Image (cartoon, rainbow over all chains, first blue to last red; front, side):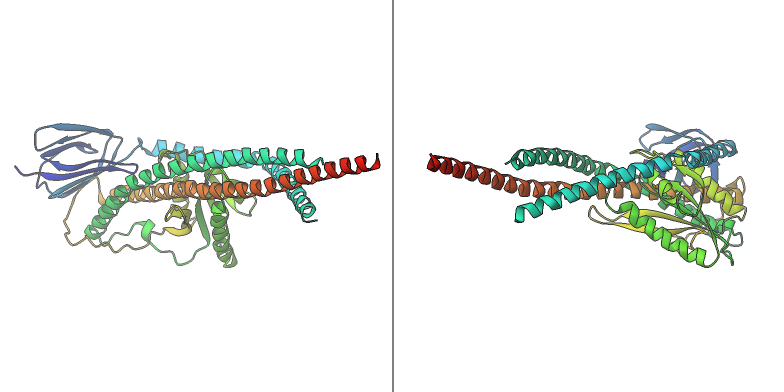
Length: 140
Length: 287
């Protein structure tokens, strides 16, 4: 029986790597079933399961939140997203990052930080001086 | 002599410090391993991404995505600076910030404007005092950074690049070489440097669903996100390694200080005894 190599990876981990008899996934244009020697294809994936049928008949399911699927005659590559993506969701994330920066910038703790650092510096200097005095005393 | 008791107090306080630093050292040592595993786990994705990008490019040599087009004039430069949230990691952040500042000064010398996205608290609290605009910030990424937490900040940079308000994007992070050395690294993110990929011999004409341009856009955005994510992981491993070394040094210094103080204590004790004896002898002689 002919097989096709299947690699499923996400940015955070390698999810599956091995030989498969057939691979099923949900593309943006519909369900896909990929058997060995499928025509070269590249498509975006919808959130949904990716089903890998192994040569011994066993099946493995992986849920992907979207991503990209590339088919070459002997290799299927699934680049899985770890999070559900979409223009609106991404926009919201960008908005959050922006607000985070604005909030932090508006926050006047910056001055507090300086005061804290100055206090620490004064303490360190005092300790250093004490130590130096102490060493001098020893030498005498 | 009053010195002896003061010295014992000091010795005790340094011993406590030493306990803390050696505990921190051990914690960091165990975290290095974990962050290295994360780093290795994320590598296949970027590699496959590059392969798909290469295929797409070869299949449509005439189409150039804006992310790959070099702009003649650079008026605005963007940086993504990856730093730690916490201190006590030696010169890790400072060295990185210095190299960013040097690069910034160069661009500003040429009349370019600079804006910056900061990842990690240290970068934010440092660069807010520098004359630079910070349109986005993310911190508290934790021990297992999630790509979701980075998407927003990256999107702001990519959008700015798309609409032309930024002409170049750099990423700055500490490259983890090994436990002993981490290198401050400044890399160009956009426009994407041309890659000569070796495994592009077999070129197929693909069936595209939907069209090639939309797909290429998605792939490029994901690729850049993966690069930033990897930089964050590299920086995380560097942070733990740097902290381990810093704490190791601190522990050793504390040990030395304790030895010196013990010597001083013994001398002080000896002096006190000698003085007492001579006083007694002197007193007896007077009687």
